[in-house]
Image 1 (cartoon, one colour):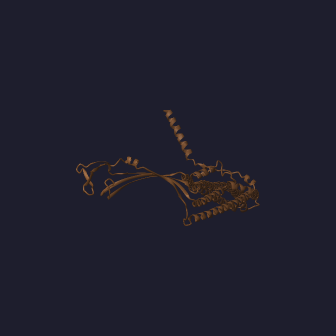
Image 2: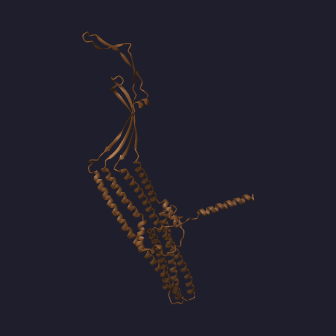
Image 3: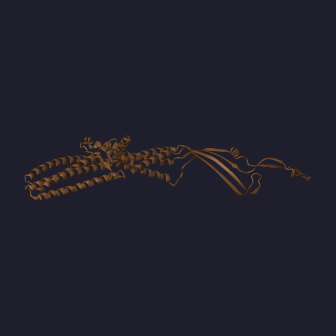
Length: 483
């Protein structure tokens, strides 16, 4: 009895603990967020469909090298006055015929169009992979930015909470000083106003955390917004190794690693294949063919002849001079049913094969105009590639400069924060001995909060811009990258 009770208690405790662990909100890491986005983003899923489409087109291009095989069959009825193939007489009747065949064709020469189409399809497949990769990188960058925004807002909450706690402590100290008659009672009113203001700032910071988490959850396309949260991470700020390289070196590295340029180069190659395919229409086309055909008729057939006993002879002429009739045996055909279907198919089978050539002579200048359009598309692709190179250079130079400026801004904000911290300590000493009023003291405290907020903002601005610069340098956006 006691053993059953103990087992029930242990089971209940285990279920309760499982429920607690399940009900706890999952804290998402940066890797969790990016990996989830790459797996569930609708745009990325659409890009995967485009990859599948490109693979199907590639298989179709490969299939152009294979012969074409088709089978045909038909069965017909003829109703009305037509010739009886057995008696040779015209009569009203219904006849049936069946025909079947197989046709095989293979291209021997098509201006190398199939080979060039296959090369183009392979390039299009590669371009689709590049586009998918670019989309994944863009999604990952957006997630990193949104994630860092959440962390930044959480840090601001900590700063404002610390400020509120400090103001509440200051309220208690000023109240004691007022009771002791050291400072006027108006100081206590000012301090309480500062407490209310600090509380308001904390509420605003908390709302900013909620909104940034909501934005990140929507970016991840999560439905459970309320239980979504990220793990608190204290990112260390240091000099990025990428900044040890010159801006020109980073640009050259970006030209080797960036998908945009690879995609632009592939588009140029696709345009070149299109031009070659257009030119192939100038060449003659040679095609070999083979056909097999057979037929069957559902009509009676003559299998022999026999003497007509009712009229055993028939006059076939008259002897000149004597007018004597020339007679011969009157034979009647022996009629039987139609031959079997398969026997007729076997007896009537026929083959045809050969080689056909088609030489283009005049087609309304369509081929010439198609070639001209392909040349224009090729030139446009080359120009777009040049634009992509220039745009990448400008973007990387700007990212390099922004990262340097962000680092300098962060270093300056640290100095400002340290100076404001010392200034607050000095103001505190002066206020306690009555050399500073409470308004100036609160100003010193507010300036410290502003300095700390600016330092945090500069910190995460530098972190994100460092991520951008490292991305252009070919460094993974996050550990265990799944791009």
